[in-house]
Amino acid sequence: MAKVRDQHLGAIRGKVGDSVFKMYGPNSFVGKAPKEYKKTTSEMLIYNRKRFPTTSAFASAINDSRYLKRLWESSEYKGKTPFHKVCDANYHTSRAGFMNVSARIVPDIYKFDSLKLNLNESVFKVEFGLSESLIASFPAPYLFVGFIQLSNPLDKSTVEKSKQLRFLTIEEPMNDFAFENDTMNKFSFSAPENSFRIINDYSLVIAYFAIISRPQDDALMDEKPKSFHKKGTIIKGKNIYDKDLKKFDRINDDFNEKKAEADSQKDIDEPGFVIRVK
Image (tube, rainbow, N blue to C red; front, side, top):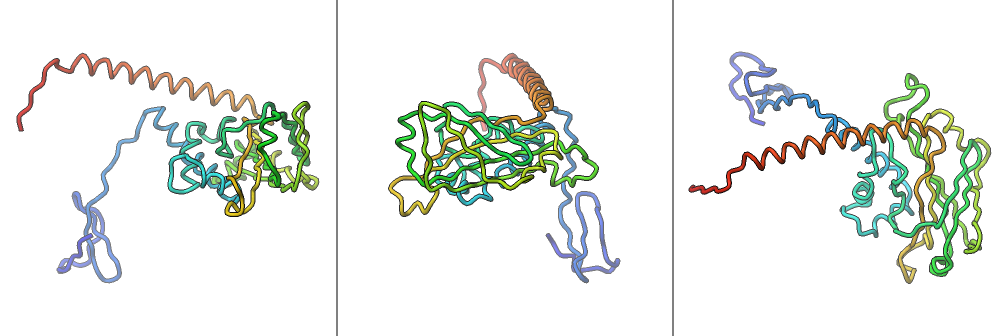
């Protein structure tokens, strides 16, 4: 920003043409005025702008856990930091105000054969299946991870904007666990009564579950930590979830249809032969 030396007309503030004058102490400075942008009417662009803060909030919550952060740090997803790797892996699962059930709280490809999840004010319990070959490659100690997503508060008037979307991370270490391959394994977090009563304040609640093997110092281990996960479970608010997914599908289909029409018109307008001299 340039400094105005001659102030014989007095202090100058405000916009003049393409320039903006500002005062810092006794001195005046002039800079180029920011361009005015037209407000977009594109439904897809408006919707996508709402997806970025959702993805960012999700990645920030994941990175609050040092164990989850370490997993993402060693993953092969794009990004210089674990935060950016979570965003890279999950942006396509974000929606306008919540992450869908396909969001990944861990980066590994290993999945439970099946998963049943039950969550209420005081209980977070799961039943899951694992194949015999995967159990053999999943040594102790373990970290059991629960992740709860809360959106669409019941009383929006009393909830701050920053709390319209919230995440709860639950972690419980286990020195050992007797996994079975021929029956459903059962686990319940050792949560005090009413630990999860905040779920009563939100209309859409989605819960995720994962298990991490060897969540200790990687430098002392022969191999990197490994984790299992499955798609999230909608605890309540399925009607809200389905309604938004249908909206997104409609917007996406409309966007792709218009893009295809524009591309086809571009092909028609393009000449078959071009020569340029510069």
